[in-house]
Amino acid sequence: MSLLGFSHPLWLAALALALIPYVYGGRHPIPYPALAWMPRDERFSHLEGWRRLLTAAFLAALAIALAGPYLKAQKVPRLGRGAHIVLTIDRSSSMNEDFSGHYLSGDAQGSKSAAARRLLLEFVRRRPQDLFALVAFSTAPVHVLSLTQDRRAVEAAIEALGTRGRGVTNIAPGLMMALSEFGRQPATGARVILLVSDGGTHIEADTQERLRRAFQDLGVRLYWIYLRNPRSISVLHPPKRNLSETSTPEYFIHQFFQTLGIPYQVFEADNPAALAQAIETVGRLENRPLRYFEILPRRDLTPWAIALALLLGLPLLLWHALEIDRWFEPTS
Image (cartoon, rainbow, N blue to C red; front, side, top):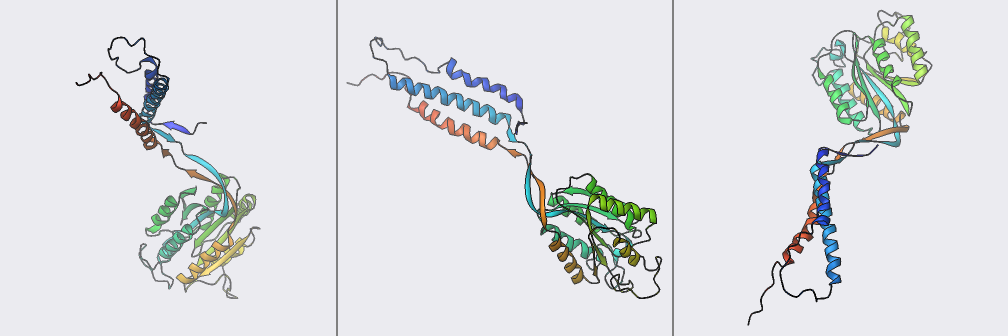
């Protein structure tokens, strides 16, 4: 497939004008008697050939410039270091709280949602070779962005999560939607789900089995950044009693994640500094060889075609200025 395209291809018909210098010389004869006996000027013949060639090239460059040439967008294979990462973000109402458990508005800078959003933006900017997707969830999941290298799209998608969270934390549907992202992509690098949530709800046994099978079939790693508040238990150091899936669902979710049969790690963050440390640790862990395609955008070549036409036209102007159109009588 050709990489060259034209915005106005009908102008290419004007390329036929490049034949004019060879059909019509463009020089006006100067009447003067008895020139037949003069010898042929070979040097002039060579110059005339170059003039015609230069004129034809000028007309061709002008026609191409009017056609609007451009290089088409290309997908170029690259080999770097990084991962395919699906950011799976909790958008439930509890994310509107700060780390001390006080409820704030969704756009308040001290809320867990705002802190996670700010640090995820920094995380994305530090990993230029990764592919990112975004899934938001509360009672139901929302597909926000498919895996892409477009950093502006990823950052805009994260910024769009600044509205107030609603509903409850239903992790399982969010994870299923995140896993579906990898089903549409070839396995060309490490696959990671980065789950940012402050808890969860009970996951049914059949849903657990479907999640377990999907994680293993797709070879996806799971990192859970668990945003604790003072009322939540530690999943790493739980109390020895009073544990139930109703009162402490996050502990049982952590236990389930440990049975997935894939690399899994949980990071507890009970303040913004701990959250920043957890995201930085994930960034260090997932830095493996990665095959990906870089999209080179369409490139307009019209200015170059115009510059070439001007470059070819300047010698023709000089030629015309030096040309005589009549004989001058000698003065006595």
